[in-house]
Image (cartoon, rainbow, N blue to C red; front, side, top):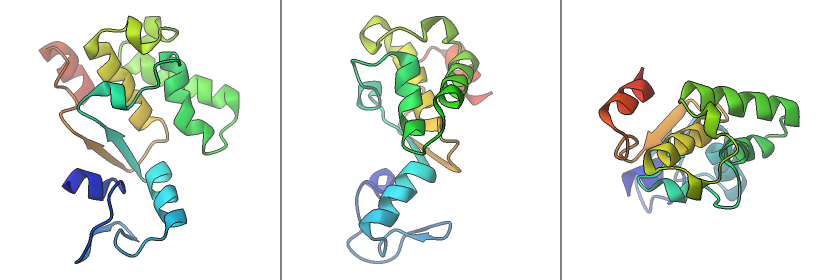
Length: 139
């Protein structure tokens, strides 16, 4: 519940929750959309919740950048850079069903990082990774 509130997915019912200059209780719908798009990246415990099954890894990573209006060539470059950093450059054109659970988790992390959010929230982001891949993610 706390991650959902901090991520802008749920609205607090009382009290105050502030992230930077954002009061999550008082935000209107438009502000909440901006907050979720620009301020927070979210990685679910189950990577399938971050990925669209009919898009390739690269296309999944590009999708959040599309919403910001970033030109296509810049989206592609950023997506490929993130996938390379996470050791998935050779899997950029694979759909999620052709990736292992650990590979899906790393693509989900790239999706969450695509818009370079100042806040990254993750529910067990390395739960499906082996110890070496987990160490690489945090490096």
